[in-house]
Length: 319
Image 1: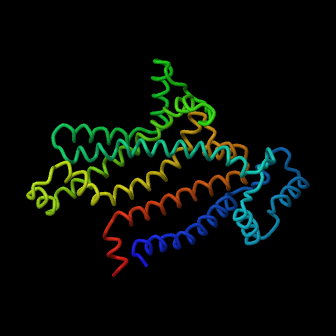
Image 2 (image 1 turned 60 degrees about the horizontal axis):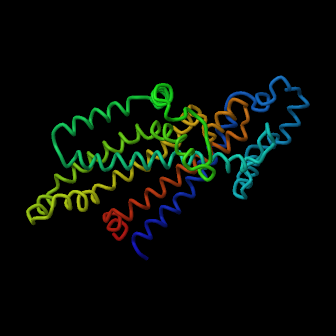
Image 3 (image 1 turned 90 degrees about the vertical axis):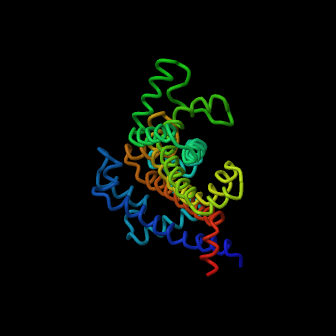
């Protein structure tokens, strides 16, 4: 079997126990929180009869192992349960909210990579004021909280310039132009910090690669500097860049919770926050599991891409 294919299959097999462990953690996290979730959901309606009825409906009167098995069996068959408030299927809620979160995070990641990698390569290949400017940007972008940056962007582009809407949402299929207008401020807010991380990683990886002896050999052979930097050096420096990009995508999923609530985007993050305020633990459980699984899948894809690009992986598997 091809070494790279073998590496990808091994990573895929190792993902299965991680998914199982994640589901157990999410299941226990909701149930081990102090307090009675049924009493919290019912509030002033929490009479003994109502509590017993809801416990029976949600299966909370069964032992924990049976509760987990019933829940995970439903998840494997596409049944995440029903919203306790609206009685809608949670899968229906996720079909509406998940595309919003994915659009936000994917656009933010594309912006972060599209700016961070080229600028990081450019800064590593040059000296002087460009490194100082990039260093200042990295420190500032990492230090500024997302919610504060979002508020400032709204103040400038909505309050002062009145060129972008402060909040709202329109599906891309319904009105692409208006959809992108609504997404500009959230995407820039979410991508700024991640751009700084990717820029810093790219710069450090490229500086290390450009100091390798084989780079001096390529220069001595008379290869063009552009070819050396963007073909040979960038490929060999791609390992840490890809790894950090995958990690930051997971950070984006977490940051999307704040951004979606700040800009009133109907994504999974806002769904989770709303469910927490309503003490709707079934929706919270499904939302957290969805975000966690997305993070695991992204890390799996990151590992596979890293294995395809890094020749050392093939050597390690072959040996």
